[in-house]
Structure formats: structure tokens, C-alpha cells
Length: 383
Image 1 (cartoon, helix red, strand yellow):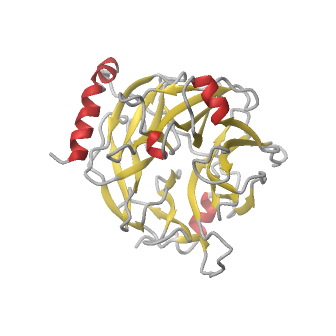
Image 2 (cartoon, helix red, strand yellow):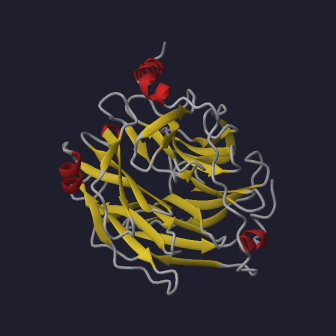
């Protein structure tokens, strides 16, 4: 048996107590967003930078719409990835004025270590989730080494200003190490949360965990595949149906993969390849009211200079031509030619919001609507 299969078998065996505790008699049901009111009958597309922070490096932005309509955005920044000086920053946009608050640090290795009572080398990969109770912040605490030495943590806030002490989300039986978050969660009808997670310690694979607001894991479902597919991105299609986009994590180019569930995430189909070529870079997506999928990804087999949008109207089989959000062909050695790690949501007005890393210096925020998608000649036609 290959080493990665041995490791996976051991992980599953060790997790049996957790899985048994979470045995479900009926599939959980997702909350499905209602069709948005058409407040923007004309095409809309805008772009801006989120407020800057005094760091040399920023990365991995996330978004959530709060109950009052405000937008919360977070990312991490410091000297570089897994640096000891990294902090997670948060800013809130007033939905009435469109203005963003000054970003402030809400988590770092010192505060995380104090609350978790474990050594923490760095923090990263923030993921925001909003419901009627407030905000949840999932993030990664790196205990040793790099990303593979991480554990998932969660803290909560009623307003985005005051935050609870973080606690670990126990998703792995081996010292809770090697598990990370990146994709946007979704809510089940019983109030629990569908949290996309992935594993990088030894073998690489993705899964969906069902957790409560305190971060207690009720059960997990692994996406079975021999390929190194990580960072699942969940797109809810119906009460029991959803898709997950997967990042292909390898030095060699391949494509964005996709898997589906028809029982609320209890089981996942074998991932299949899409025509969306990429190499080891994050992906994100949303579902429009007409059922079509939008995916944001690095449309390149070699680097992260191109960040594009594509659309599928048949569940991921056929796709439109890409619409480039960024297409950097310059040769300036002073620029870090990277536009990456998109995070996408639809707000209750139907608009699509995408945030992403811009040259590792700023976080860019793009907003568009369905009318703009339908009007664009590239996104309107499937190939």
C-alpha cells in the first residue's frame, strides 16, 4: 500500500470515535440563498483596493456579509508567509457609505499562543463566516515548521469589534496537526456549519467538516482521490446538493477539479477534471440565480500572473472563455508578479464580491452583478 494511503487509513481509523459520534440518520440540509432582488438591472463592475496596512506583505483575503448588511474583510500580513510578525487584519465596510474602517490586527502568534496554551509560530489563512449571531473567524495557527504543522482555530464576535479567545477545532487525531482552512463555509438548516478543510501533513487531501458555532466537529467527509487535491471551495446548489472546486497541488500543471454531493456533504463523488488549467493555486467560485457557476482562478500552467473568471451553465462540464481580472505581461523585476488566492461571495443584493492578493502588496476588491456577466461576450457563451 502506498505511504499516503497508509497515512490516510490511520487518520480515518483514529477518527472513528468522532465519526461515530456524528452518525446521521438523515442527510443535513443546506440553507439555500433566495434569488436576489434585481437592484442592478444594468451591468455593474467596479474595482478598488482595500485599505493598506503597514506590512511588507499581505495575502489570503476573506469576505463575509454581516447581518446588518456591512461587509467584513480580513487577511494576514507581515514580513512574509509564516513569519513570526504576521498578524490577521480586519476592516469593515459601512453598507450605507461604502467606506472601509481602518484595518486593525485581531490575531497574531502571541495572542493565539496565550489563548490556546500551545506554542504558535505564526498565523494565517483567515476565513470569515457571518450569520444572525455575528461573525466567526476561522484561521490557521502554525505550531512548527510550515503550513503542514498547522491546526485550525476559531473565534467569534457579535460585531467584528470585540472577539472571543480562539480555540482549536479538533479535526485531526494526531495532535490536531496538518489541517487547514481556506474556503468559504456554508450554513445548514439546523444551525451547524459546513466547513471546508484540507490536510497537508504527508498526504494532501480535502474534506468537509460539519461543526457547531463553538468549533466542535460533529463529523467529517473526506474527498477520496489519489491526486493531491486541496483547498476545497464549497458552492451550494440546493438543500442537499453542492459542488466543491479543488486546487491541484503539485509542481506540475493540471487543472481545477470538481466533486459533487447529493446528500448534504455526507459523501462526495470522485473528483473530475475541468478545462480550467492551472498549477498549484487557489480557486474560488459562486452560483448565480440561473444556476450557472462562476469560478475565479489563475488561468496559467506556470505562474500566477493571470487571474480570470469563467462560467459554466451545465455544472462544470463546459466553460466559457476566460475573462481576465489581471493579466500581467510586464518584466519589471521590482514587481512580484502575482494575483492570487481569490475569495468570492454573493451578497444579499445579488452582487458578486471578489477579493484577492495583488502583488502581495495590497488586497484588491472587485464587485460585479449578473447583468454584467450576461453582457460580457466571453462569459455569455459556453465552449
